[in-house]
Length: 304
Image 1 (cartoon, rainbow, N blue to C red):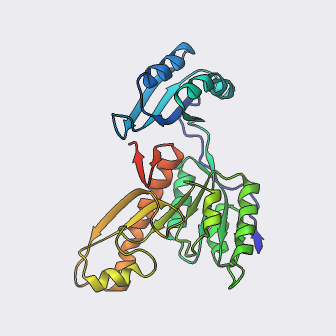
Image 2: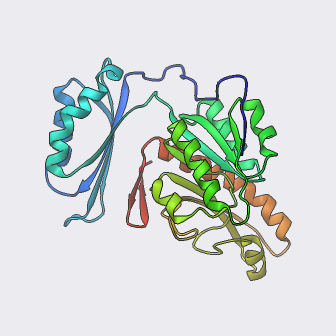
């Protein structure tokens, strides 16, 4: 394993002009029932918060799962966030809530895994540098050393962790150590062409986003372009999903397609797919970082 570190700080999304530094969000999931929205709204109002946006959804009005995302403004929020979370705990306990508080202006630390294709990696780095993704790219991990040259201009630490036959567990242990040292919040598989072990995935539940170069559930696994071309499909697509223990079967976050025809061979399909993969992955990562994605069973609820 090697570490190629840049001479300056890893990129993070800049503080954008006009961004509300006292804007926060509260995301809640629990079993549905009466009084949830009223209790949350009253709690925020009693502390002087102004709710600027709210989304909610229940999977079944007769007792399903309930999801709520509220965006609010509150003076001196960065100094008060921990106190708010503590004061909210009795409400969370009463409704059996999982609750997350966050500052809108605070970028979340992520790690990007990559193999030999750089298009998804570069798309993410460009979005972060422009401020379109509220992320701090803490590190990039690649199983091929040549990706270090792609990452170097962005000033991000690159770690080469090769996956050698018979030594996958050692490689994953090294990756886990790097991730924990960087305190990352999300792992993005930017065309990382290795299957993660169930033990690795279990350590990061709904915190690993993969991009699959196919419109799942069609053409799972390797060589989807060959499968698509052989079937003579008229649409090809890409799917961003959370990784779970079953290959390419985790909860889907975002998908998109493009029309093709009999004139497109496998190289053409692969070339056309890259644009979809870049856009789909960037959207999925952005929605996750903004707490817009809720997992229910093997599906997701995504607030716009």
